[in-house]
Amino acid sequence: MPATCLKLAVLAIMLVMIVALLRFPLRRINAAQEINYNEGWNAYKQTLARSGMPLYGAPPDALTGATTYPPISFHWIGWLAHGGDVVKTGRWLSLLALAATGMVVGLIVAELGGDAVAGVFSGLLYVLGIVIFLPDRLGMNDPQLLGEALTAAGLYCYVKTLTPSRQQPTQGGPRARDGLRLLCASALLFCLAGFTKQNLLAFPAAAGVDLLLRSRRRFAVWCGAMLICAAALTGLTLAIDGKYFVQHLLFQRTYSFDDALISLTQSYLVTFQGIVLVAIVWILCRFRTNPLLTSAFVFANGLAFALSGGDGVDLNIYFNAFTAGVIICGIAVVDFEGGQAVGRSSSGMKAAALMTALLVCVSIGLPDRLDADRAQAELLAHDDAEFQAAVALVRVTPGPAICEDLLLCYSAGKPYLVDLFVSGDQLELGALDNDAIPGMLRSRKFGAIELDVLPEEASASAPLVRKRPRFSEKSMDALLQNYNLALRTSQMLVFVAK
Image (cartoon, rainbow, N blue to C red):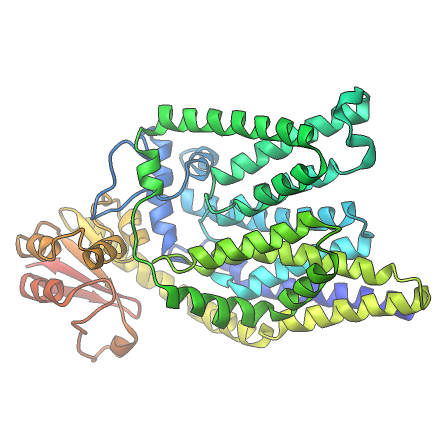
């Protein structure tokens, strides 16, 4: 009885925390300003897909880069928006995908032997961890969480095939046929996830390893379904969105091993050290009996670390690794609950203690997160009014525009001609002439230029900084010589041509 009460208390506390953390993101969904830099980029691509223009119809270039995501999310959001606001549609879909992934994580744990408490705990732990780890991805117009939901659903369908009665597809019984259907559904969902975000390879790779160890015949069936689905999606992409699909996905960007180490050690492990530690201990004890979860955790973490050094790769690259860790932690709770040597009450209390410890580890950053949300909520209306004023100015200024905040140019109805993030990266790689942007500024090709305010420029009287992360000093000199500062807000500097 005490163990049950402690478990229910843990679940109740988690639910209260999630509700408290969701208050600000839910308010922010209807804001006009960007939540994350990627929102404007995604909005351009979603609108392009909705209009029927191919996403990969031309080779990548050094000024706007490439459509570095697969096409599914752009088409889905464009279709769901029905001619309306793709940004808000993408934000709501992202939020629903987070909830869906939490539910699927709970179902996976339950399917692998957990009870209702372990399943609910795992689902809540996933949602709570994502919200605390990377709050600007919550309710944001980006396909990562949608892809996470699809790949988790694919893993769930595969886990359901592990029921003994579904293990022999050649016997022809209804349960065996059900197992075959689930294998095919798993393959389809994994492919849909991969065509939503191409980094979601860990779970299908883990399922493939597990299948190969269990049954080569079932592995061949699953691989066949994967190949058919992947070929169909590739064919549709090439037919609808253009022949340069592969070139866009492989578009070159700078890479920093130091950035990868910082992402791993100063962000991911700091937030999820408890979950990672429990997962590693569990793997050391169970890797022979559960190669599926072992492979999923190892593959997801290894792939995330390898990709995290790429320029522009955000911490959401670790979401898949976190999902694998949460599932393992849910199974670890189940294992503690199943202890028999010291009696059920003792093992139940150990499971409750593990749940409590995991909750404490994840929620250490909760006070800081709530303080940050409170501060942002107080400024939300003010910042939104400033954003709308900048949109109005850029909209009425003749000619195209360059916006460091891409959602500003998108909202002002300006075409996507220059992406300062991409151009800065390509300048560093030597793929862009260092006079390309300064030359356009000297010729006043663009009517308006928007730059984000740097911390050193926070005061309205502070001088403008010449050396900026995405804008060279040469570009800044050309800007100041040919453009006037027309609007200065707490977030933006908007220049118009002289």
